[in-house]
Image (cartoon, rainbow, N blue to C red; front, top):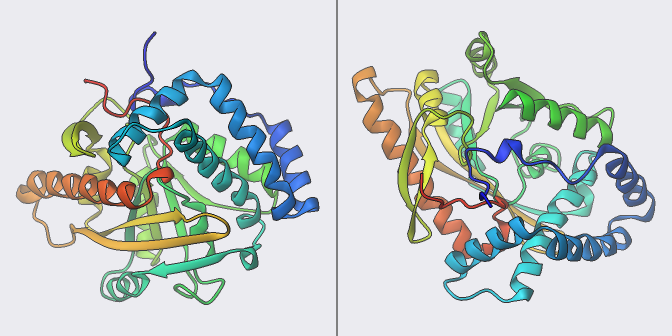
Length: 304
């Protein structure tokens, strides 16, 4: 049986559907976060029992992250952390930031950079929660007037919009779909308007361009596409992770990764590879300190 790779993750069928998502939203908003979290135990047990591909991938990843053979309890914690962040998305999209204890680290560096160069790029991964960024500027812990646009694969953008509407019909994300003739033009417009533009750099969106980097002690292929886009946009790039720390606690952390604003065209290939390597190094760091936050449930290390 072929293992799902970072190149074909888009073709894996989703197990959830909008009816059950809406039902979960209804239950969660009426019972509250504490009571409705009880359902997550059964969801986690379901995936442990009936998602063999995800279970194998979880075991493989945890073996590398924990540097030991993972137990069934480790895998339960891994799936439960994922279910928790998905569940919390319901409250974050409904502006219930009062339910969470959110620590923000490094935002002042992003603000300082944004004052010098209009528009900043945030690069993330399927590590923890990107949705927790909605709290920035709304709970007095981050940049006031924080405006975020997301750059993503077109089909994924459609799924995200459908999910958002199911959770909260009034919730809106500014999403720029990749693969359209005016995609980069739209991104430029937002950056020039002092937006923060976010993109994920741990999954392939096309078959062109990869770099083999050490990741958790083994070789893994990372896409170069996000870094090529960053180089074309000539903006500073920050890593952003929203780590789930258990209970109602999250930590949003920003770190400078690269600055393409002064990179000349002839220097781009070297700068792009360096940024991709630093990205892999920092992902390794965060996977070590928060090992149950990695939510790529496919074989990330499969030989390419």
